[in-house]
Image (cartoon, rainbow, N blue to C red; front, top):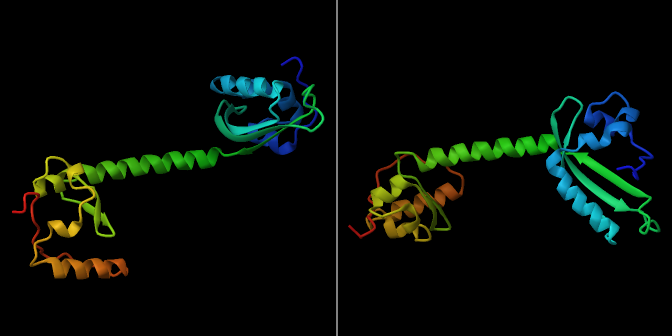
Length: 193
């Protein structure tokens, strides 16, 4: 860190880290990197010293209030300065909001997945006629040992011949975006009964 001299930091960088001035950030930049990010950064800087000319990735940082920020960072050695590494440009984009949104989306998807998997109602999803999802209740209703046994099978294999025209038409209409009312249908169990 003693060899590093920061020549220029723009105002937006100071804003991201929540400091009052560029000078404040310049004097304390190292403390703004999360401890878990240092091993990766160290390895990348060693690679730069061994001839690599750039690297890019995500880095966890700490703002002035102690909050965690996520940065998409690019480090590039300026041409002609590879031997001394005396001119290195670091650019970053604050992706904290995007990371938080992704986390919230994943959490929501996980809650929905659990809701569907644990539903007492049989739920089967098919794409182009093949079953791509069946919950445990569907497996029990169909007499399968587990839901995975249903995956990949044609959905019409489980529809009684008397109900196949109705189901085929409903699938066609749903593909066109038409809402469907619930109707009674005859389905077959895994063993054909």
